[in-house]
Length: 260
Image 1: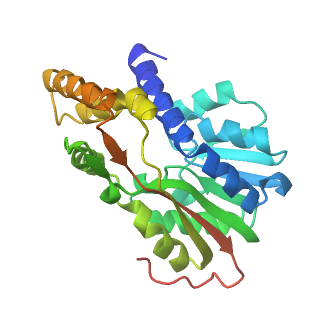
Image 2 (image 1 turned 120 degrees about the vertical axis):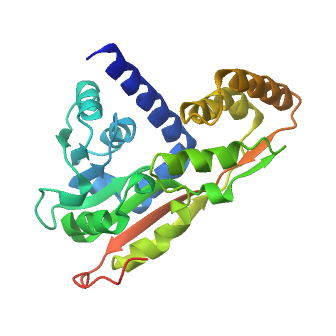
């Protein structure tokens, strides 16, 4: 692996791990709801470098399969996690047989899909009747609130759109899952970022904006100086809703509704 590829993987891995921390406690609640300990076969789609895969492996004795279409992240996950079957594969055309898995899950995944409904229906196909399709966490940047308003939320929305992703996917999960014939429960994690988390994460948040070329290096340094002072004075507030959806596969899914 060359330096450029290693830097790419390191950035992705750091972001995946950051995201996994945000909803860790809530994921544990979801795992209990779907009976992850009693599952025999679990599929994780869009596994990335394996932040969630490793967690699932520690919580379940099931046979675990994980897929991602990026060969670099799959190779990285495979190096770091044992007793998991990893495959380079697109969720839109999975090679698994119908009704293979008890649970099919993903994390921060649907927001990156060009065809979320098509991908969901493939997830439904490979899930057993009575099993679960789960979106563990999907953000909705349309619900971003910050004070003072330094424009971070607006820049995140533009940056996410620029990368071809959907910054408003959270609010769409219910209609997406129900249109796929799933009996769906929607939940939201509604936490305000505390002072400690702000100080830990604010540089990374603005670095994402820098990487989408909406600001330059000088502007990045200026805004970080302003942010740190505001946070240390306990005058900064950021809120971002993160949605999850648990869909139970029922028998009649052969004729799904038109996608939303």
